Length: 601
Picture 1 (cartoon, helix red, strand yellow):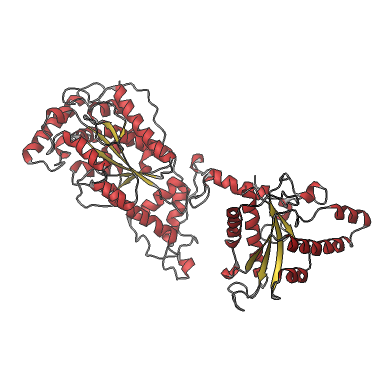
Picture 2 (tube, rainbow, N blue to C red):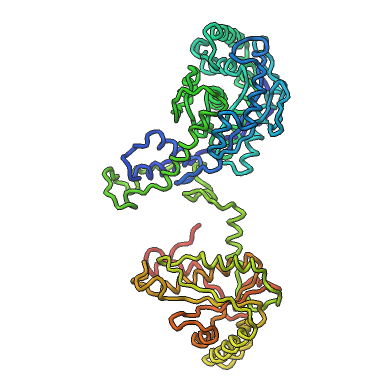
C-alpha cells in the first residue's frame, strides 16, 4: 500500500437550506419558471457553498501550473517538442497567450507557477515552486516518488491558500505541460475503469499515426499499473501516472473547498485532477464548476462521472485555462441576475406560477447539525465588511460619547472634511437632504453663542427642586469656547418643495433626516479620535440672529468638536448618577404594543 503523510483539507459542508432558499427566489424572479436552465442550478449551488441567499463571486484568481512529463522526453506523442512547455510558460507570463489575454480582458489576476518545468523558465514573474525537473517516464515506472507527490500536492494547497488569503473568492485553474494529455488519459482509463481506446483523443491536434502510438503507450502504462497489487490505491495511482501540475491542481481544489471557495475547471487536465479529488473525497464535488467540455473523449467521460454540466461547448482545445476563463463572465452574469432581477412581488407583476408557499418551493427542513450556518455566516447576502471592519463600526457606536472637555489644538482640515462628508451621506426621506453645516471658528461668535446657551441653561434648571437644580447647574453642558470648532447643523423643511416623497403623512421626516446626518458625524468623529458634544440648550431665535440664519431654517444642533483628553467609558449623565440606560429587553415588543418579546437564547 502506498503510504502518505500529507493531510488533505476537508471540504466544508454546503448549506442545504441556503441552496433551497436560493432556488425558491429563482422560482419567483420575473422570468418563466426554470428558464435560466443550468445557470439556476449553478446559482443555487454557489448559494449553498457560501450560505447566502444572494451569492457573489467578485474576486477570481487564475492560477496556471506548469510542469514537464518524462514520457515526452522519450516518446513522440505530441505535435510539439518538450521545449515548448518552457516557451509557452514564458508566453503566459508575458501576458501574450490566449489565456493571459482573456484574463487581462476580464480583469482576473494571473499567476504562473513552475511546479516542474525541465528548463529554467526565463521570466521573473513566474513563481518557481519546482518539485523536480519534470516527472520520470511513466512507461518505465512511477512518474514520481512519494516525496515528490506530497510536495506537488502541498504546492497546490499553498498557492490556493495564498491567493484566498489575499481575498480571492473563486479559483480558475489552468495548466501547461507537453505530454500531459497522455498522463490524463491514463488516469481516466484507470479511475473510470474504461478501455484506453475510449479516452485517447487528438490532444494538440496529432495525426492518426501519432494517436495510435499514444494509444499503445498509454495502454502499456495502464496495464502495468493494473497488474500491481496496490492498483486500487488512489494516491499511488496518481503518483504512478500523474504529473506535477495535475497533482498541484488537485491540491489547490482541496484547499479552496475547505474554505468555501469554488474552482472553475477548464478541460481534460483540470477535469482529471478534479476526478481524482472526487474519488478521494466526494464532498469536494459541489465546489467544482465545469467551465466547458472539450473534444477530448475522456473529458466528457470525466464530466459525466462528476455529474457536471459544462457551461460551454465550443470545441475548445487550447488548454491553459481558456475554457474556464470564457465561462467566467457567464458565472458572473448569472449571479448578477440573481441579485438584481425583481421578484414578481417586487415588480407587482402577476405570478403565473405562484406556489402555495409564498416564497416558492418550500424547502424541506434540514436534519443535519453541520448544515447550519454559524452566526457569522447567517446573513443571506455576502458581507462586504471584513470582521475587523464590522467590529470597528460597532466599536464606534458603543464608544460614542457626548464630550464637553476639549483641548485647544486645531483640527486637521482633511479630518473636518471627512466628518462633514459623513453627515452629508446621511439618509434622508425623499432624498431631500435638508441640512446645511455652518463651521464656526470665530471666538467672538462662539462667545455670543455661549452666552445664549448659558441664559437658557439657568432657565432650564428652574423646574427642578433646589437640590437637583444645584446638581444640574454644576454639570458642564457645553464647550463652545474651549473647543476649536463648532458646527451648527440646520434643517430646511422647505427643501424639495411642498411635496417630498415620503413626507406627505409624516412632516417631521425632514428633522429625522437631519438627525441621521448628525449621528453620522458623531460616529465619524469618534472613529477619527475627535470628541463631539451636542449643545441643544438654546432658543432658536437667538442662534438664528447670531448666525444670520433665514427664518424658515431651524438650527437643530450646535456640535462642538475637538480633541479630548479622555473618552469616558460610560455616558456623562450615567456617570454622575443623573440617569441609567434602560433595559433593552423591556423596550422590545413582539407584533403588538405591550406584547413583550422573549429574549433570544
